Every structure is written in C-alpha cells, then in structure tokens.
Image (cartoon, rainbow, N blue to C red):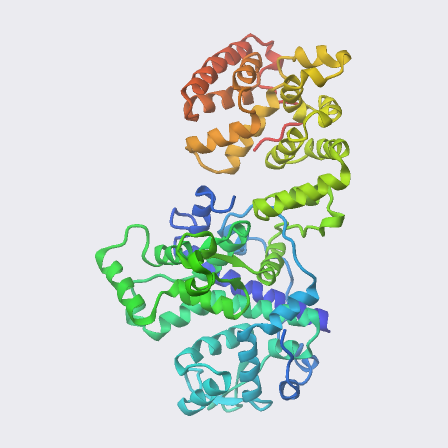
Amino acid sequence: MAVDLDGKLTRRAAEILRDAAQVYNQAGLAGTGNNPVLAGWSNGMYGGLEMTASFQAATGSFMAVTGAFPVLGQKAAAGEVTLKRVFRLPRRLPGVRLPGTAELAGTARSAPMMVKLEALARWLGGDGRLVTADDVLPEADAADAARVAGLPPGLLPYLWEYALVSGWFELIDEPDGRRSWAVLGPTAYRWADRDVPGTLHAWAVVFAAVLATMFEVAAGQAPDAAARLDFEGQGVALAVMLFLARRTGLTTASVTDTVRSGAIGERPARRTRRAWDEWVGRFGDPGRRLLSELAALRAVDLPAPASQAGQAGRPGQAGDLVTLTPLAQWALREQFRLDDITVPVVEESGQLSVAGLMGLADGVSDAEFSAELSAWLERRGPGRAAMDLVMYAGSASARTRLTAVGIIRGLGPAATPAWLDAMQQPQLRGYARIALSMMAADVPKSSLPLVLNPGPDDMTWLATDLLALIADDDDPDPDPDRVKELFAEIVPPGQEGWVLGQLARASSPDVIRALKLLARYHPNGNIAKAARKAARAAAKNARNQPRGRRGRPPAGAVRQ
C-alpha cells in the first residue's frame, strides 16, 4: 500500500508541475527569447527533526486514506504537457551524485517549512477545521494557526496554499453543502508514517506546490498591483534552471533578474516597469521571496550574509551562488524520469566506471571533477585508463567523446597504445592521428607509416563532431567565440594548419559544411582563411568523386 501511495504522490507532484508548466507555456514564454531556461542554454549558464507523538496521533496511519487519490499512471500521456516539452530538454542530462535516501529523508524532516506543516497538522487535528466560502480559515482561527506555526499572520496564506495544493490538507463539504472543512490529506498521512520513501515522496509534493503556487499566492494578495505582471509558472522554470546549472550554481542577482524579466517581459512598457517597482516596494523582491521559501524547505542553499562571509555576500561573487540541494535534485530527477529523461546517478568514487566518470563531467564543478579524475586515474593507471576511455568514446556522443579525448591527450606517451587501438575506430581515427603525429618520437617504428601517411577521409569525424556540437547549441547563427572554443577542443593549439590541410583532402559533405562554418564564424582570420581554402578543395574533391560515392557520410555517422 505504501508503494502505491508513493506512486500517487509522485504523480501528484508531476501534475502540479505540469499544470504550472502548461500555464507558463500558454503565457507565450516557452517558445520565445524570454524563456529563461532556453536563454540559459545559449548564455552558457549550464556549462533531521523528529516528529512528535501528538502529530503521529493526529494523523494516524496513511493506510486509511490510500484511496483518496485516483489511480494514475506514471508516464506522461501522448501529447500531454511535460517539463521536457515545455523547456525543450534533451533525452539525457548530466549525472547527479546523491547521498543515500536515509540522509535525504533526514534533510527533508529538518526543513523548517515541513516542521511548520507538522505544527499546522497537529492544530488541525483529526476532526479538521471549518473554512469560509473562500476556502480559507476564519480570521480568529487564522491568527491562531499562524501563532501555532510560528508565522507572521501575513505569511500564513502561503503555507495554507502549499498544504491544499500538495494534498497535505483537503477540503470536504458537509452533506447539505452549507459548510466546508479542512481535514488532513494523504500527503500528511504518508509523512506521518515516517519511513524513508514516504518522507521523500511527501516532501517532493510540497516542493512542487511551492514552485507552482508561491507567485500565485503573492499575486493574490494584491491583484490590482499584479495585473500588469506575469508570474505564471516561473517557479518551475527557475527550478529547471537551477537543476541544469547545478555544476556552477546561479547568482542571486541572476535569479532575481530572471524573475523580473519573466514578470515584465523583454521590452516592458513604462507602466509595466512602474508596476514592478511598486510591487517590490510594497512586498519585496518576489525572486528573493521564492528563494526564501525554497531555503525553508531545504531545497536550495543560499549564500551567507555578507556580515558572516566577508566578501561572499556581494552580488556576482563566487560566494553569492544559489545552488540546488541534493534533496531537490532527487525530486526533480524523479520528475524528469517520468518525462523519459535520463539523469544517471553517479557511483561513489571507489566504484566509478568510465560511464560514471563521463556522466559526472558536466554535473559537478571543475574542481570536483578534477579531483574525481585524479583519483580515477590513480586507481587504473594511465595505460589502462586510456584503453578504457578509447573503448567508451567510440560509441559516445560528440560531447562525451571530446571529454574523453581531452583526458587521453593529457596522459601523454602512456596513451600511445590506446591511440594506436583508436586508429581502428572511424569515430576516433582523426583524434588518434593528431595525437600520434604530436608524439611521433614515442610511436613504434613499425607504426610510423600508418601515423604519418593519413588517408583522405581519416579526419572526417572531427568535422562530424563539430557539426553535432554546433547542432546541440540549437543556434542558427553560432556565436564566433563558441565556434572557436569547440574547434580548440577538437584540434589542439598549433595543429590547426595541419588538420585543415588534411580536411582539404576529404570529400565528405560533413567536412565541407564544417569548413564553411569555420570560414564564416571562426574569429581568427588566419584559421577562417585556411578553412575557406580547404572548403573549396574538399568541394572540388566531392565533384570529382564517382557518382556512387557522392554525399556518403562517414560509416556509422548519426545525423543530427
């Protein structure tokens, strides 16, 4: 029964988030430049307490209310709005490193907001409380509930709405329909059971409710002031941004700027800007309000105040970063799984596989990845590590292949046997030729002819990878600095002229397209000129090819 209810809680969280995403989508932000999640891709933003016995007694067992939710499937139905569709997420995201579920559950139970919800549940009791026609508590009860929860009366509407949306409370009508009561709901019952799965799934529903409704409650306190502002779905968008940027975090300023941009648009009218200024003057910055709520839920870690952390409190400084906690990462990963998005959980350092290491590359900070890589190389030794990376990289994505190639290059002569093996794989042959030509003195004499006399198509896959990486950026007009960065990853400094000369001997359409792209967008004039010349030579080669070979992609190439 517990497993069934946990599935229903997960589905309820999904429905809350998808409803918010649907409103966000209908508001016209999802497909525009004003979508902060999509803007983050192009801007490079993504490179416990014990429960008291009285609460247990008030809620009893969750078993009595497992029928309160309708039986629902787990996956999104065809055509249903999902986070993946609204925010154009790929099928696979970088891996996450999560602590054990018991530790995550302990974090959930330590969250001040969950403690306040427990207090509110104890106050509500097993019989519930009467509510008004507007589904809120009468004034006297509201004041008492705020006192019990330890909240200023003006903040109770937030907690009340989270409780209703998450299923912590439910509203039921008397048989004659004249009065309505707020009673404990299945989420509160499941939390009261106190086991680890129930704790995590109940917390995840509350997390979804905060993301979906915080701005709605804020707007409801002053509808006239909010009439010119658009807060719909922004909490969910911000959570997705934080998940994607978990490697580096987001500054507080970027969070508040994102909320402001979403609320007033890219080119706000004077009245809209004035409405925003008036709102912030009356109620404070809504972005900071959301961060405060998420911090109370243990969903984000906020920067320390300047008085406690010296320079760390200054906007834009490294110490000013907002990061998603492992608990929130766990909850969002569960939601992404429902949308058929793979987010691997990376193994502990001692058991880290090649796939785990590669999955970690884009999921943690550079410093953490460097430490993990050093430990991984020490356990394997450079020769075995290079061989393992070559075996993995041949069938990997362009992005992962470049990460692996960069590591192998850093191993120096110890990687020579692995590079010689890589000559047998079309996807790696070009990278191997570059590396071996730079280490000719360390290559066995018997292999030198193979290294020094490349075939005309040996470099083709370098072009294929460059095109794939540009396509991943989903930008019809690539940024020159980005093109320069990618080309430098593929071709080591000092080797550009030789590699472009080899590409000029090819005839593949991918090579021609990549060379034309370099000629047009690479900011270095010499490289652009050489690429232009090589593109003309490759195009001539293609025209001189027998008809049956024209337009043939490299063997095994995957078209984007």
